[in-house]
Image (tube, rainbow, N blue to C red; front, side, top):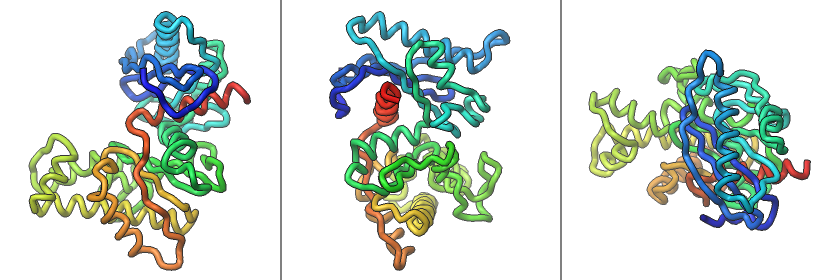
Length: 313
């Protein structure tokens, strides 16, 4: 049982859906998170496609929460997932990893669970948590970057989330080098091919032929003066700074909040990144670059906020 700064409000169920597993939790009326779990999504069969498999899985988890916490009655559910999601309509427009295209998950969840539901993508849920309760809460214009195996962002303009029908926030697929590596999206030189945690590993392997276990190993080798690791690390900082400078020129955020593993190393990451962003800007508003306040469960906090909003919609 772990408290979060949600404050009093409706009890809600939250589900963070990834390609192979679902993270789930129940938030009670005091904002306490109960029963945090990670469970595997059953593989689709000929009789049950990916949509039906997920809905059945969510229903099973809801039943389990009811058994484990009989005194907490949820008033709504909040689902989040990777991919392009139309928050307003609650539709999964596209998620290659989850094999979704134009699936009305909000409507399906409400029908299945008999509760008001919200549906958003993971990056916007993380952004919701940070902008409403975390490191971005004192600003009206901000970008929250989720930096990990994938790179995505959420945008807040004049105090409101800007999602453009689900297509805004694709920071990982901004082009930072037109002659760069091919991205899984089909484009060449996307930020994700340089600055994601997976890119740090693959680019080091491309340069040296050696395979490392984790992105932290690249940083460790860079500290020791390994030339390939230094190049990979500096290229990642350069590319991320370039992408942030583009957003600064177009949307002029007051703050850029960065979450994910790279952001947890503190000044070793933020000091050179700030220097690079500052060098790229001229008359522009210089955004504050700050680490996120919430960790790996930030998405569930955002999902809880969205679910609570669904109870009053």
